[in-house]
Figure (cartoon, rainbow over the protein chains, first blue to last red):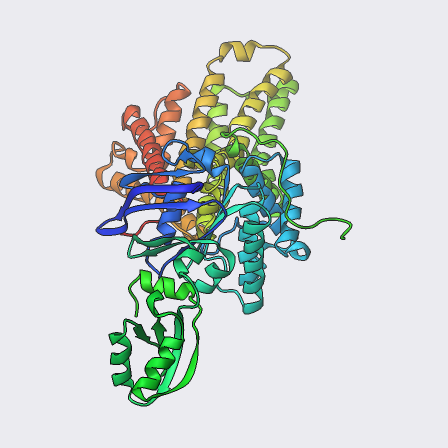
Length: 306
Length: 279
């Protein structure tokens, strides 16, 4: 795998709290989701990669450069969109983004030109002369993306980019992120606790839980093959039928409603095995359809949720 | 197909080497204040003593009846002392929000995610305050010396008081650096510029008040080192080859000033970070 970010046995301790515990992970080129519940260590990982937090142990490389040895060279090639509201006070949008471009090393004229371009790209073209402090939450998210993009980074760190956005704004932000990752050749790490956001925009995922890596890899691979898991609802002796299915080697999993998920092993073929078992046991099959594996399944399995 | 592609495009231009960001930060900060009318009024006000002194120098050089107003070395010392008021006002006006406002807006993580070091950020912010304070102390005092030579039409005064050039420079720098570092350190401690301003004013007056009370009780000025203002006065007196006004050894006063700057640098080093870690 062509990794843009690599962590080897990284541990970060805040006082008595281990925010990252011996984390080893690889982030592939392209769009990678960094998933995990709140407090899993996602933001700490990003801040460690930026050099804001010094790890107590381990080694990290970004774009082939050691974070401990070349933090400035790394920061010149990455863009960071922080989770919380962040701006330079007293500036309008175009001045702010242009200023960020200059701080990233662009000449003043180029920085200003890029500022106009990226503000149009993120959808703030018409509001670019307004003071950032008057922006709505959604606009503040967009301007954070613009300042991260102004110097044309090779790698973007996006920390909860859809936080506080209305549904339409969220959709547009995800489109931008997807476009950057898939069409514009910008590698990105999207940190989020929202599974649909990651599933829509990313090809790879790293799942974190309690400061550790729970699972990582291409999303399609982690989901597993489709077509061997079925959603099933029956009428009749449910408990007895579950025993029958288990006896034939089929795993079952209860869901929220009265629908259960049944895994049919290769040796038993397809859904016909379920029909045969139901007919033999004398229960009615009221609902049966292939269950498409989702990132939610991967996440639930990785963090040990039922 | 659109006439102009407003989509994302890659940048193919040049990039400046790292290490110059402090200049960008400094210039942006200076420009922000220069656009404020209130601040321009303040700067103009700080120039009034300079204009008065310049008129005095001209009169004493060109009008025999005003010869008694001719300046000596202590005139420059007194001018610097009067400018302390403007140093104080500008320090509070400009310095209080320099870092506090960035902390309020979470701007530090924006700054420090760019290719710049923390020291560059601090240097840039320091340069904003330093520039304005130098503009009301170092620059007008040296200009006055220049005007004195120009109005006299000869170098006699300068030759007889050559020590004035380093004395003015060192004294003004000491005054400016002390004010800049202490205010910047206080600014890094809070997210409220107003609170920082009040804190600075409070510390300045409180230390003077404590010294005043101790002087009233003991009748001795040996404890003048408690007052930050008195420390500066004491050291600057010595630099201008004048008799120190307090009984505290000037070395002690200098030590307090250097110590305050060192503590301020230490505070800045701890507070200017991309992430605030609460343990």
